[in-house]
Amino acid sequence: MNIYKIKRISTSSVIHIILGSVALTCVFPVFWMISSSLKTQDQIFTKMSLLPGSLLDIFNWKWGNYWEAFVKADFGYYFANSLFYTVVGVFFVILISSMAAYAFSRLEFHGKTFLFYLLIATLLIPIPGVFVPLYLLLKNLGLLDTRTGLLLCYISNGLAFAIFLLKGFFDELPREVEEAALIDGCSRFGIYWRIALPLAKPAIATLIIMNSLTIWNEFLLALVVLQDKAKMPIQRGLMVFQGTFITDYPLLMAGLTIATIPIVIVYLLMQKHIVKGIASGALKG
Picture 1 (tube, one colour):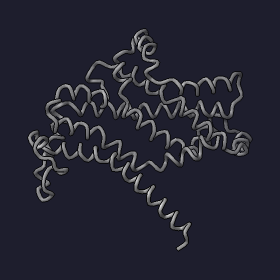
Picture 2: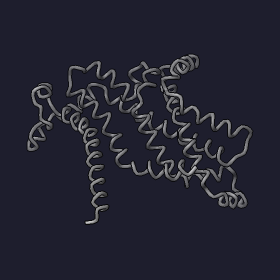
Picture 3: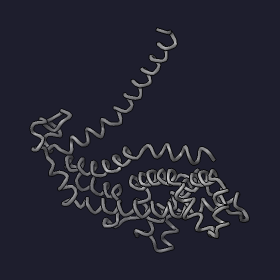
Picture 4: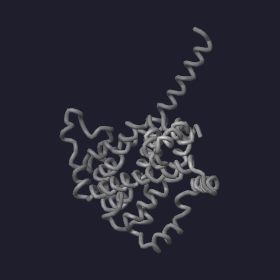
């Protein structure tokens, strides 16, 4: 066998072993969390196996922990709130950023370049760095402890990167198509809505996934803005949930699993769109 081929196989094997080890360290805590959510309180401390019990006895595992966490512990409200924030927040991020990105890409107006780079510069500011002015602004506007206030924070937090990604995609669209549409009498908004937006589906799919992950997993903004339990998203609710059920570990693990599994499934099913969208958008810009 060729010595270079042996080296390539050896290098590939080492890389796969390293990546497999890293993946295992990431997956194991999730597996342990799910397993613990199906045990009793006594089994958490006495049964050290990775499974709650025998696979033949699967129907006797403590599946009721999920029902108790979802209904009796009001975890269903937190789940519904997160679903609302995610759907509405992502919708407005895509709507606003797509219109702004198209304007930056195709329209000419005074200060366009300066405004674009000023917008991109906001990506350098971490969220905790704006907590004080954000809190005072929301307080003065009467938006503290409101769903509207939190939604506005989520939307504004996702706009800069979304505009950057979509502008790069729109810059690559052939202008001849738009010029032909203008000759046929199509308005600028019509070109954006009927031509540019449908062609930007890969980038939009990427933004939907990334913003869904961000909003669903966000905690700090919800901690600053909300105090009412009825309005809390799932990650903020977990803090209250943990404070109430900290000694009931199976119930706590069931709550954590409910918060984790849905977004993990969405990511695994749609992760290919992230690479495809970025490759066809920002990296070309």
